[in-house]
Image (cartoon, rainbow, N blue to C red):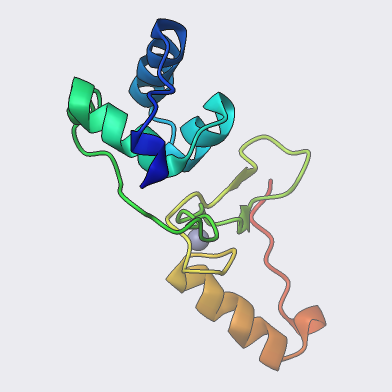
Length: 123
Ligand SMILES: [Zn+2]
């Protein structure tokens, strides 16, 4: 722990640490930004109590792929260009463009001949 022998912290560095920590930056990021060792940053943050100022900070959360949100059903209702045309808008199935009802419909339509299944709802 050689770095404990000399104190790298200037008031400016400390101020930047506080700013970055309160912004929610990770210790790795802060350390890189300040040109310091991560352990130095963690230790300092704990000493001056800046780490505890942010409740619920996710700790060591691996940066994974973003969790896809449930989308809205893209099933068209009515005819494009005509009044009343809209998308279904219900919560779509995970990783699918349609809600359960319309996914089943789409699936069923694919199994049969689409040409023999005209759905006319317009005027
Ligand atoms: Zn739908």
